[in-house]
Image (tube, rainbow, N blue to C red; front, side, top):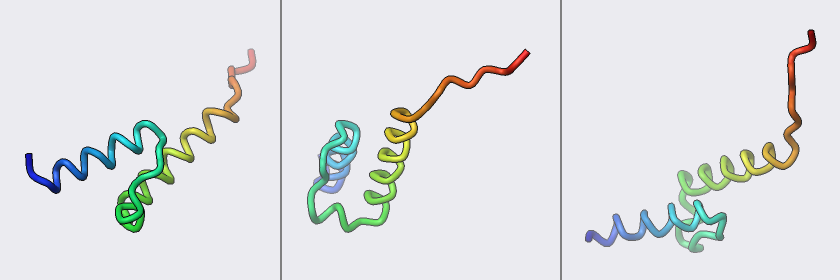
Length: 55
């Protein structure tokens, strides 16, 4: 397996487990964006309420 592919897989696996990514990778814009999106989704999940249409 190519080293870049293995590194990318490791970063994606860490993000999927909500773990901190390697310091070197954390400077990557795409990795920071993915981390921010995950945090946003997790935040919405914690604060979400059921919205049902009124009848």
